[in-house]
Amino acid sequence: MPIQETLETSHTFLTRLASEAAAFLPNLVAAILILAAGFFLAGRLAHLVTRAFGVSSKIDVTVREPLVAIVRYVVIILTLIIALGQVGVQMTSLLAVLGAAGLAVGLALQGTLTNIAAGIMLLWLRPFRVGDYIETQNVAGRVHEIGLFVSHLETFDGLFVFAPNSTLWNVWMRNHSRAASRLLAWSVTVPRDMPFEDARQALIEAWQGADREGRLSEPVAFLDQLTADAQVLVLRGRVTEGETATAQRRIAEAIRLRFAERFGSGMEPKAIQRIVPTDSDPSRYLGQDEAPAANPALVNNRPEAPSQGVVDNPRG
Image (cartoon, helix red, strand yellow):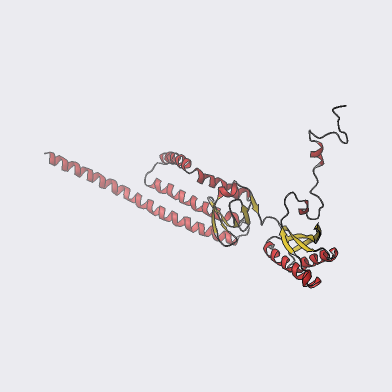
């Protein structure tokens, strides 16, 4: 009798299981098909969006890759939600579980979330774009891609750099490609007995001779130092963005060749050195003798500023 009851219970269970499986199997197959179609559609849409961005010139190259990634992830997330709903998962319970899991994952991956926030700020404010050459205290290179998590850079000697966005956002940065031109300067040491005007003119001619494509402008040459046996002149001017490295090579060579041609091999410069004016050096202001003038309103309204032309004597 117990064996017969066990067999009847097992038969009932198997019958119910088969019935439920028969009812659930079509939903499972439909969910799998939805997942397959969704992932295929996500890849296809990402490809089409990439091609559309390649044809259109209105979308900045900097935001193309993040936008493509967002399109792909949105389609995948919607596909997962629809597939789970097809197999009977309640969205309310699912959202509650995802919220709790998201909180736990967020606490565990604070660094990753920091990179996402930094990536959003980089894409929003755009301190640099794809193709710019940037320099930070940690890395320097040309930007190839700005993602939501990391940015891809290539160093000057061809190394690939995988830089988290937070390392680019939370530090100071120099963008070597942002300005239309850059100020370059060379310190040239010549013999003391060389006529100053001739030396100055030779420097200007060397600058003009190195300008093969109209990329150099505003040359200025002046006396910087005078010693017992030498005089030090400075040649400076503007170089168009993208030609800095070429100008550094050409101008130094042009200075040496021009002096040798004009004064002879024995009167070549004793030293040619490229210099970078510091922030406190007023000579970096091309075309100006001094730094930009201060705002008179701000200067006159300082609380500690004394009366104009009057100095109080506390001792009477």
